[in-house]
Length: 271
DNA sequence: ATGGGCACCTGGCTGC
DNA sequence: TGCAGCCAGGTGCCCA
Image 1 (spheres, helix red, strand yellow):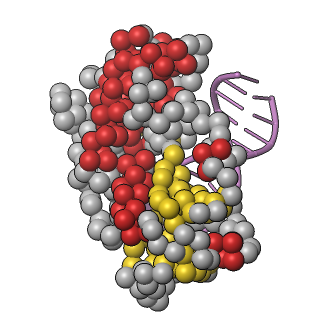
Image 2 (cartoon, chains in turn orange, brown, green; image 1 turned 180 degrees about the horizontal axis):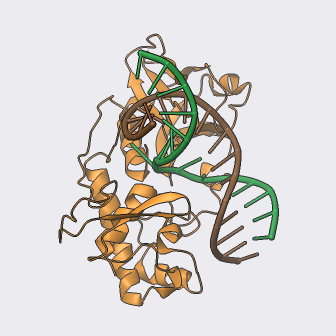
């Protein structure tokens, strides 16, 4: 479920609960996430003081005095704040217990999520050191997009989803951004003109920014940190709307596949 | 360097 | 009602 807006919503949702607290314990029930949770992490983390919560791409950071936890929600993960460590359910893989008595519970049916610990700056962690700019930062601009797309033959939608180009643009928002920029997702990246690159960068910022403002899109069973669902608070223009009329021009939305992922677009609005 | 495909996993839905 | 088949929001890695 989580794309960048959902991850940022989660970050904000846990921030005030965990900042300034001490970790009373880490309880791991299933280590088999995308990367196994290291044995002994419980001892490393217990007693650490939490300084704050950060995010880079879709990775969440819990900064501690002597290191940081690096968390990823994968495709089906969620992080919730509980008043106490009530009995866990099937996919509740670990709990971070706080000295306040509260519990930060990680749940992830598909186990594509992950938990790492680093003693250094998490931004320089092996998984993060070579990724592209944040989409909402000024560094990500039309000029940047135009420059890095020169000579690239991949479909624009895949290009947008490449974390070396820009981070945090997942499958839903890639389609939505292409629609907002009125550019066909299957075009080669190199075909972007300067004005189209400008439109596309602005579209990505607007789509992600709006989604964050309303607390994430949320399809199916995503829950934010307080457990609220937040269904469809963002209006989707093309995603999962194949065959239905375009909200702008009524032309039926088309579905295609790029890089084994569903792509949606309006054949009339997008050129 | 680039692009394409695969892998990791479970659950929900569809259609027979 | 049962079951096989297909699909799903991520992303690191391997190979040509």
